[in-house]
Length: 313
Image 1 (tube, rainbow, N blue to C red):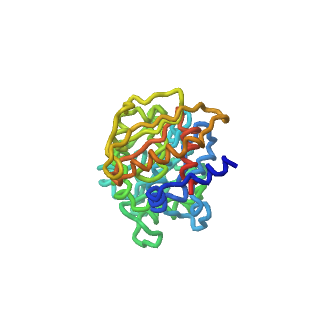
Image 2 (cartoon, helix red, strand yellow; image 1 turned 60 degrees about the vertical axis):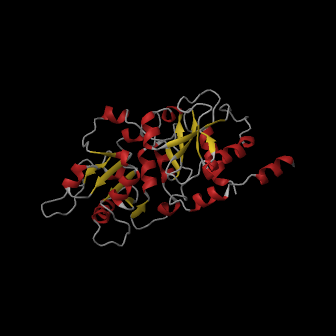
Image 3 (cartoon, rainbow, N blue to C red; image 1 turned 90 degrees about the vertical axis):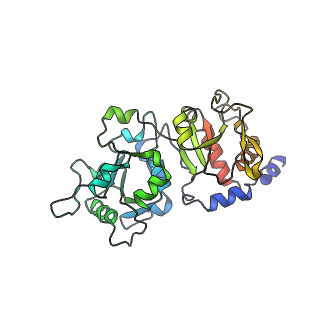
């Protein structure tokens, strides 16, 4: 009975509720990278609305595309040739200037119509993603992304073809660190390409591996201001135990919370949830900085916390 009362007393703060409701990715929030996933498990990234689509083309939020790009097992999923085909349908000079990491220029014929890339292998690709400058509607008759996506679908793409909502303009504004001028990737390069923490609440909460949480480039790119370490065997060296920052209502709040639990089914994670909720809530300041949920591999303890947070009423 006492256990039931404790469960009922746990509530997500009004600020986190508002943040969650406002998330453009709330239907798939809680998606995490899988270190043990089979290839078909990448469908966990597909939202319910996407899975129900029968049109062959789907608008995908930038956050969902970010998470597709940053899935990893023993190796980054981008190293799997059957995982992703990412096509840039802008003009060639725009593509050459900068594009999303691993994107290919969408080929055209002599009259300017899109053609299928020679190495597309559409029937084997888990994700086919297309973008232009700023398409935000599937009804945009002038959208080059929509035109290309329809062709990929007609040419028997394995799954519905995804169009990045807001195009390159919105994606690059949200994730400037995933822009590049690099065109050709060797297999060995993709095997070691850096992946970022999975985004749970857009622009605020991420699930990270321990290695990612200690990577100074990731800390800088994601503007990380705090870390919740859900593990007994690791220690954060980025934030000192006594380090603080300005939090909600301009109060000084700690930048690190350690939750020392082992990776087994017998640990009492529930008893720590109130502290974790309060810690994260203290950092919700709409200042563009982010919070990490970290465990060793980012697939068990930190994921369990993320799921619990998103189901707290």
